[in-house]
Amino acid sequence: MHVTAIIAAGGAGRRVGGTIPKQLLEFGGRSLLARSVAAFDTHPSISDLIVVLPPELAETGRTLVGETRRPVRIVAGGPRRQDSVANAFDVVTSTADVVLVHDAARPFVSSDVISRAIAGAAEHGAAIAAVPVSDTVKRVIGHSDAEVIVETLPRESIYLAQTPQAFRRDVLRDAVALGRTGVDATDEAALAERAGHQVRVVNGDPANVKITTVADLKMAQRTATEIGIQGRVGTGYDLHRLVPGRPLILGGVDVPAPVGAQGYSDADVVCHATTDAVLGAACLGDIGRHFPDTDARWKDASSIDLLRSVAKKVRDEQFTIVNVDVVVILESPKIAPFLDRIREGLAKALDIEIECVSVKGKTNEGVDALGRGEAIAAHAVALLVRE
Image (tube, rainbow, N blue to C red; front, side, top):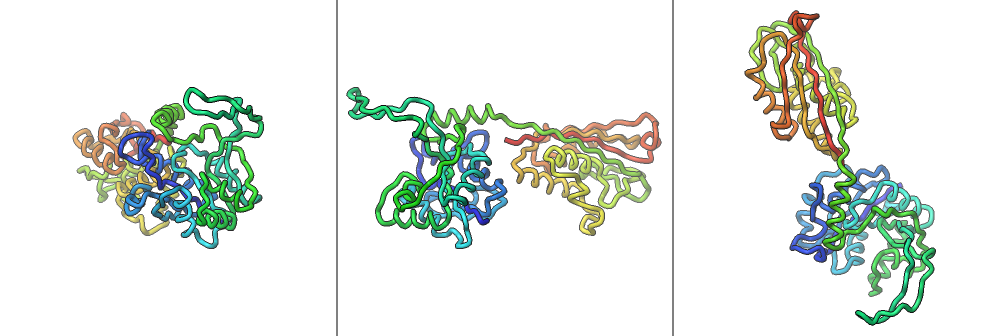
């Protein structure tokens, strides 16, 4: 099933104050837009995305969205929300089975809510995420201090609509066509209803809030803090024989020595242990899985370059590398004079500050092959965080 997600971010969103459009405001280091895009980009059922931005931002839209796994198209929005969604629908592929519409101002949408919306639309034609009200609902008339209750509504039948709203392609086509005749609506579900389609409700999530005011933004910042950052720790270990005629490379630094590490690549134990620690923290396997010694591409490869590519890979998975700590076990030569250069090389490869990289040298006190100077080893620990 081909599922397209439309991320509606075409408005100015000035109610939160300031001159920056609401969808570009950041908390926890990421914008509302980037958070909402990521929620759908990482969902296994989503095939592609269409992001609607104000016309003045559309040209730089790909930069604002950032890197994604799924194909993304950028569309300029219109004067109303329904116009923006209509512009996006115009570029939806004809092979799409289900199309979702989601407000970029709802950055906390969960994978489960997205799945329920997709399933509801696939089965019934149209579905929206919504949550039942828990308070008694009153309908009032009047203005200011002259408001009077005229009716108490049965709360069992009152739901608060959220996004995503999901539609089979033909249903959304009818809704968009009706909107283009001049019919105004606050969302696509209302247009679908007026076009004669039934819209089912699927369970939303109280946490799937919409950021509209300054107070909403402050609450979102608190929520992000309460959700917290999940720390992930990984460990790495590497060992190589020491043989004449090979360079001794540690953290990308060529350390003068009569012997060097024997291996398929440059046998840099510091980089290999760090790479495994970073991959392990992200649950992405180990260095052998990504750079097997059966592949000629990695013959004599620079391990600092391999580490750099792994660092990018974990960033693509929405991880941030916080720090690494490496212990090198080597009888000789002493590596103390080279530690700062090794730390600097690792920091650049990992794209973190040098203060977040620790490298220590130890001996094995003459015990076993390491102690006899026949081998070199390294242990590494890496801390990653993921929102």
